[in-house]
Length: 191
Image 1 (cartoon, rainbow, N blue to C red):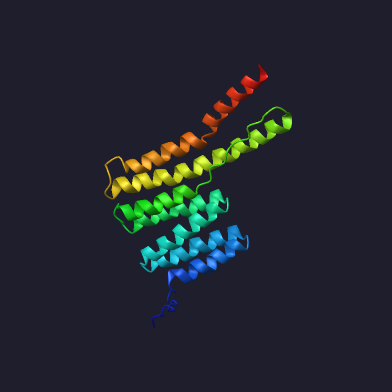
Image 2 (spheres, rainbow, N blue to C red; image 1 turned 135 degrees about the horizontal axis):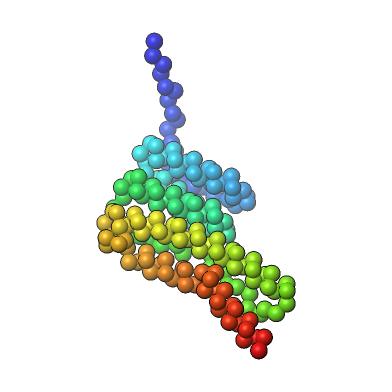
């Protein structure tokens, strides 16, 4: 006697899930939305509906990042690239535009400029810590995208455009560089 597997329900169009997930984020439930984005996209991937899984992940990464949820957004961005690899999506301008869209939603937050008191130094330390998290998250995403681009049709070292994005973000947001600029400003003001 063989057991029959229960039939899975058919998946709705990705747009329906995207709208539901946007509502969860708009309610402020970022972590719950994160888990739902991951499970929804996984269901589409297992059903071989990769383009819809990519749409869900793109939407989720951008929305989480726009709401300042860097860790959640970058995790979805990395899963987006992993899905490109699983689906063996070739490198092209359309996919590069999607990667660029995610990249542009990574927050770029200026550090406090007027430093002087201990409270200001505390703000600077907190800002540097947040900048390090943003840089690490963006680096993970762009390194994965560069690796994908090298494997699926761009230059053998990866897309030059992706390398430029990586360099721009590191230069503009790196805590080490920002820290050096801030240290210079502190020394200037103390003289």
